[in-house]
Length: 257
Ligand SMILES: Nc1ncnc2c1ncn2[C@@H]1O[C@H](COP(=O)(O)OP(=O)(O)OP(=O)(O)O)[C@@H](O)[C@H]1O
Ligand SMILES: [Mg+2]
Image (cartoon, rainbow, N blue to C red; front, side, top):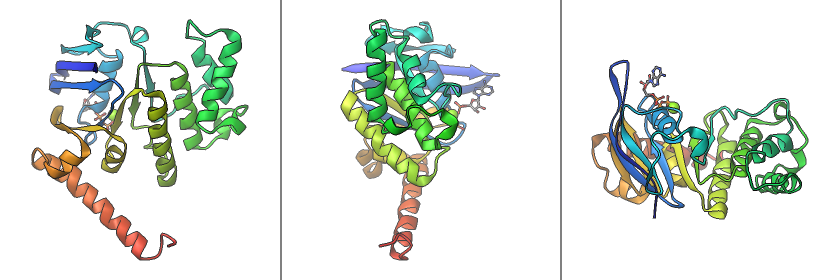
């Protein structure tokens, strides 16, 4: 079943075509990554999907219904940004509970319970009474994810959520995001310029550059049949370089094996 569909999306800014005829769809429960270099239009697509930006032309459909003009607050989509965007004056628990307050069906008593459950799911129970500045970057991002989950969105969008984190934290958070997706069966759209991240997380990857989609396919098919030179260079060459340097790192003994 198609959850979200984008048809003929064009966005012009300062007479520049930032997005040119973007078409894609996301299946219910699918994990789709949008992968492309800086400035290619990833965040612009995300802002259009969540309703923060009206496209110059084109249509966004959710469950087959046109939502192009619908207010962001009515779209039932959650978002996790690079910079966490937490309330600094509230505790971890407070941040997550606050998100629950927006849900009609949650009663005051059960809100606390539900917040605690979600905090446990992201492994932060022992930190739940701390304020965000007492936590590491990875922990703060876990709070942001918990807060988004608490709102029970139909679709969760991530905009480069790991770019401020170190390599080890990225790896563990990556696993957690995958676990969360399995558990909640949520539809996820994950923006990144990290090839490895996209390949390890996604059901399908949308490779784009300069406002154009070059390929949308499974990781396996992209490796086996890159659509063009750009995909070959940006995706495959970079992946190969990363794998080579990792292999050198491991065989040099620096990996502690
Ligand atoms: N509000 C804006 N003001 C000025 N330029 C904008 C604005 N929004 C988008 N752009 C331009 O649109 C293009 C796409 O920007 P966008 O932020 O979508 O790229 P991105 O793929 O998310 O890049 P990054 O990986 O660096 O976050 C860029 O060339 C950017 O300069
Ligand atoms: Mg961006």
